[in-house]
Amino acid sequence: DVKVTQSSRYLVKRTGEKVFLECVQDMDHENMFWYRQDPGLGLRLIYFSYDVKMKEKGDIPEGYSVSREKKERFSLILESASTNQTSMYLCASRPGTGVYNEQFFGPGTRLTVL
Amino acid sequence: GQNIDQPTEMTATEGAIVQINCTYQTSGFNGLFWYQQHAGEAPTFLSYNVLDGLEEKGRFSSFLSRSKGYSYLLLKELQMKDSASYLCAVIDSNYQLIWGAGTKLIIKP
Image 1 (tube, rainbow over the protein chains, first blue to last red):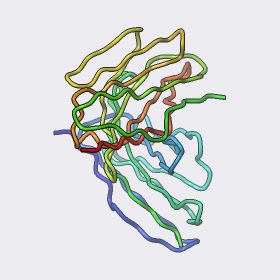
Image 2 (cartoon, rainbow over the protein chains, first blue to last red):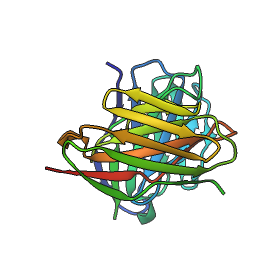
Image 3 (cartoon, rainbow over the protein chains, first blue to last red):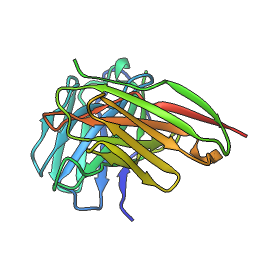
């Protein structure tokens, strides 16, 4: 059974804190993605990675960075959390054979920044 | 700009049929996905269409018309467990995935 796991389901942080969100997949997928999901908006891509140590900016990378040191793990970092980063964060992975393949999502991390 | 439109919310009755529409204006088209997302859970894949026509998978079917920039997801014999959000997503000419905001489907007994 394929699986994408995220380190926390719920997280509460204070403004200015550095926040780490971890994502691990066990499917040996090349591609990994970080999205945020807000009410009334579609999933918005923050960053993605198509290989170890490779990263590409998505649509809304400002205020975020990522790390992919191992194939199975993709971390999202909020350098200095702000209240407008309160959101649901979803990690996904996809095999590298084609963009037409489905993405597999983790359960999400609901982050609240106070 | 790129845009995907879906109704925000729909209500249907258990046992009935419901059609969820998705219209898109994107720079190019390389396929369309439908995902299901139960509240508080991860989205899960339902279907992928790249050619015009209807794809049937059990109680769920997905239709695509590329000339009209239009797709729909048809759910038959609705069950209470079908209460969820349904997300439409299009692959554009740059092979990026553009997501709609999703349609929340409420099933009533």
